[in-house]
Image: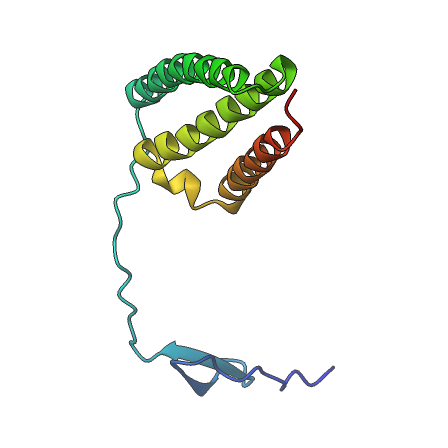
Length: 144
């Protein structure tokens, strides 16, 4: 027979004791001292389907408004003697920047818990920066 007298030390907040079983073998036991950790409670309710539909409707209305704003921006750039292709490219990037920022805002308003996930918040922020850089690059092209 092997000697099974090895035991792990007790965890923090526990006390170790040794008890003798009915067959004469020693078995270590641990008991909790009674420390309790108070965990703050948070409201973790998820958005309802109605809120998702409302958020989607807001994004759709904003997308339409941003489309018209981008077209007006393109017309303004053509009047300032930019090439029409350059003006259209800048308008497209402006639309993407505005829409990406509005997605971040709508998600933050209706489901802020999603924005705390780095898998969602970092790509949205990086996309906004990339679209903004592409907007400035397209505007830095020479005029006609």
